[in-house]
Length: 324
Image (cartoon, rainbow, N blue to C red; front, side, top):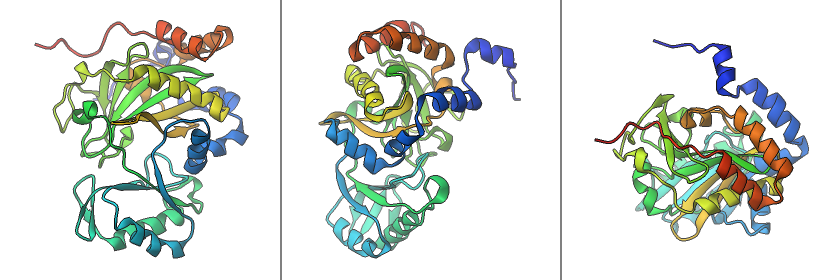
């Protein structure tokens, strides 16, 4: 049975809807001319490297169909890699290869694909099958993240990532997205991944949801989300908030992964981050955005904005039931 919530209740909870997000926060804070920097993953990577921000290693870029055969030959000496569209969104078109079986390649799900499948997938990327607006695209090939083993039980067949919403340089809300078998190793909530709301002050878990419903354990590994607390939390907030200056965007989502050896690493940026993060945190965004605007207007610098956000957005209670 579906339980409907009244518009008045949604306003009281501070739930941000799609229209207000697009008109008030994106339309007024994100200059159109700056979109290209985040919509194009190659430009994002280049800008990040110029600022000394750590990003996944780039193996190569495929611009034209005639380059695909040479690409496959070049990947024969690689054990693991990721092929993704430069202008993709929502996790579409990302192919993750985690191992080899002779001349074949093994996906995160365990499925085996051959060189012909890699060629077809890359050709589809170039044709724009997975890209924003369906326009012709390029394919980029990156190293597979060797993610922090402390997070190994919180994700299945994929890499967990951390999404931080940043408003006017202030980190306002965060969640970890945990891949599942149902999501085919992807970290996107609409594909079946688990979203774990995170306390901005400490990086510990607040609540976890899958398909819009509260969960307490990972559906595949059985790991309890109640005990999750992210390492390198200071560095994660510093990296996410710093992306506002890099892009010139007032409202953005920064996707970050924790590498075993290199620590927090910028995966990609989003000028139109989704709103499911509110469900994962069991809290609306609007009240925090109002406070963030005040922080941005009064804090002395980057460090001051983060410190004030950690103070104001601290969540003392979690939605997890007491463990027996």
